[in-house]
Length: 160
Image 1 (tube, rainbow, N blue to C red):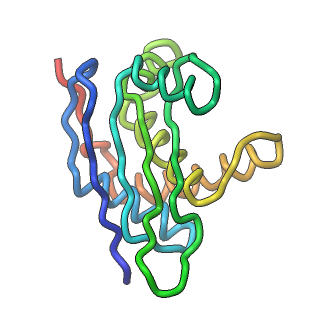
Image 2 (cartoon, rainbow, N blue to C red; image 1 turned 90 degrees about the horizontal axis):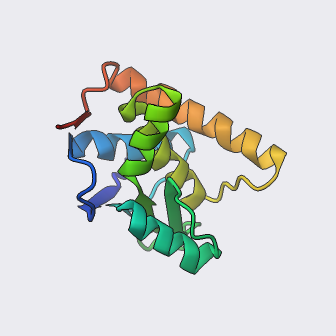
Image 3 (cartoon, rainbow, N blue to C red; image 1 turned 90 degrees about the vertical axis):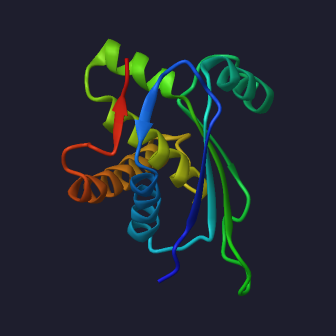
């Protein structure tokens, strides 16, 4: 089995939280397994809201807050070389704001952002209704498989 190396970078200081890096790697592996594919490297960057707004504006001409942004590198496996899937930018502040307004758990919302970003790296899109339906189905499949491994959400914890 090809194990994906996951590099995690916390660039933000808005939200203080701790997380189990092995669990984040397991989340990535779960998505890859659910999608029947492999990768050699994925980078995940936790970004501040202002940084996310900047990247959203520069790359999508939309300066509003957003939950995640993906930058694919190798969408398909090429020959026998390493597959660098790409970078995912995730905003913890957006997850916290969302659950404060709509309910739910920070852990589930944060996991969703990582899964959503990974699926974009794997070629999923969510522009039209059919694509959104396919994306939601893939998200749920991965989140269900991951929550079976970490049923109590102990992999991430908000700190005061």
